[in-house]
Structures are given as C-alpha cells and as structure tokens.
Length: 423
Image 1 (cartoon, rainbow, N blue to C red):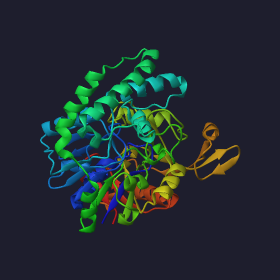
Image 2 (tube, rainbow, N blue to C red):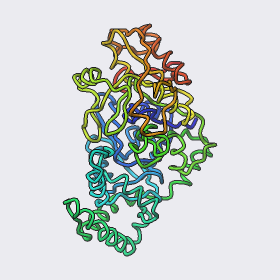
Image 3 (spheres, rainbow, N blue to C red):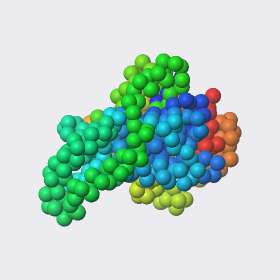
Image 4 (cartoon, rainbow, N blue to C red):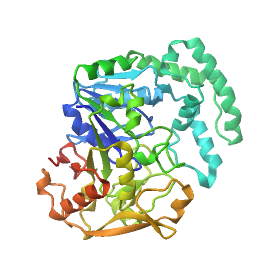
C-alpha cells in the first residue's frame, strides 16, 4: 500500500505525527517538496523530535528515508539537523537516508534575499520563514539554480556561486543587509556537502525498485494545501506544490504508484504568517496559546487559531483526491460547550461553498457557521475511537460529511500512542 500524507490547511496540521504513526507498516518514507521551512514535531516514547528536512521515518529503525528531487536542500541546515537528531540517539546513515542528486541547493545568500524581498513588500509581505526557500525555487524555475549533483564539479559550482554573489550583493546593500563573501559561501556549502556526500545518489531507481518489488511507500507532505503555489491562498503561499500531486513530481514516481491519500487537518483551523483567515478567532487563539499550544516548530511564532473551516477543507479534499481524513488536536476543543463549523462564505450577499481565486474577495468573505454541542471533557485518555464522547464523534461525523471524505484517524494528544484508528 503506497500512501500520500498531505496537509489540508495552512500547514502545522500534525502530519509528522501521522507519518510517524503509519511508518510502522511502511518500508520507505519519502519527502517530495519544500525545504527546512517545514517543521514536523513528533513525540515518541515521551521524547520530542523536531524535524525540518529529514523525513519522520528516520525515527524508526530499519526504514529507508528519501529526500526527493522536489525538495530544496540547505546543506548546512541539513547537517545541523542530522547532528541534533544523532545527539538524541537516532542513527543517520547512508543505509537509512538517501538524498536525490537532483534536489536543488539553498545557498546562504538565498536566505538574505528572502529577507530583502520581505522587507521590500512592507505591509504586503508574505510572512515567509526567511529560510531562502522562495529564492531557491525561483532559481530553479529560472534555470540558474545549483543541484546537489552539480556540487561534484567544484570548479563549475565555484564559478556559479561567485556569479550569484555578485548579482545578490547590490540588492542586499540597498536593503542594508549583510553582503556575502563568495569564498565564505563556497567554504560553507562544500564543508556541509562533504558530510552529505555519502547520502547523495540518483534516488529515482531506488524508489521505483521499492515500488515494483511491493514494498510499502509513504510520502510525507510538507506545509499544507492552502500554501500550494497553485491552489493556496495566493500570493500568501509557499513556492512548491504541497498537494498530493507534488509527491509524485517531487519523487519521480508516477500517479499509478499511489493507492491512497490521507489528508491531515486539525479539529479547528490555524495559520501562521500573512494572508486571509476568515474563521480566525481571538478567544480560541488566546485559549490554545494559554495551554502552551500552537507555536510554530520552525519559527516559534504563535499561530492564529480559528474555528474549523470546511470551505477550505472541502476544496483541499477535492484537489488532493483524499481517501481518508486524519483529524488531529481533537483534545484542543475539550473545554468547549459549543463548537462552530464554517460551512460557507458570504461574499457580496452570495454564499460560496468553495474558496475564491479572486484575492480581493477574501477581504469581503464572512464565514457562515453552524453550531454543534461540545463534549466538555478530557479526551486525552481515550485509547480507542469508541471511547470518545458521543458529541466528539458527532462533530467528527459532521466534519467528514461536509468535506466529502471518511474519517480514518483521530488524534487526541501529541504522543504516538494518542492516535486512534477509526476502523
């Protein structure tokens, strides 16, 4: 069984936990897009692991993890992540981690360019993590990027890096940002690459062989559907395809290899950064932040929180072809007597059940809610789906009806063991 795990909201849905849970029956775990702007937090056996580029399957012995061609790799950032995860007792070797030689490289100057472009946008800034992801993908599309395979030709790469530094420095100077010394950039990139070199290879025949020999493949999405460059709340999006299709193009495996798509969403809605958020609710945000929840794994920024938005989820299920829903953070609603679900947007007097493409329409979108009874009791101790309160099961059933996809898993806490299969 080959399964794609994809986020259905603005990221931060708990995908890492669901991937970690499903990895037990997987043989290969594959990342196909994004970079170290993504952050997956996994809690296993009481230990917290924060992952950015490494697939969550790295926490399981005997699993092969692949960083695919669609990912943009910050070599120094990945080395730091490997060092940190190894200090927590997790082995990272060429036997359990492979990196595509077609993956593009995030250079140190990409991060400063990211910051410069955010500064230039002012009030219209996107709210990026400033990890250089957008500029790296821009170089990829402009056909002037460097791939990991290119780093095997040091002379070629040195010339390319010097050219890019010479192009970037004037822009950085205009925004009073630090300029780069080409020799320092070259030294940083190649020092990190030497650590990664044993892991870098042509991963496409590896994953195809795994598929053809009947091994179970698990595709780990990063960010979420509403950040997809085509389907998200443009322009407040990331620079890659975060939907299920991106897992295929980002790994070199065809759509015919996919058997199921698990869409992950929270029992409410969150987002970080700039952009529209029709169901955002200050009271719910304050409550969850007061519990120490909903802070970004990558940046530490508090996330905006709001009621469940099934206009967005319905659309996300459509474009991903979701075959089952994994609903996380159900316990975040444990203290409420009444819950709200957004079923439509009223825009200029007309109720819409799918999100608009017109960016100005978001400013006029008013959520249409229906209310359901809360359960007002602790769900974190539930160890099986039937143990959930009836009101919680009613809420989840209604969520599935509005989204057009069945509930497959329910999360009632951060630990691996707090994931409840529905059937």
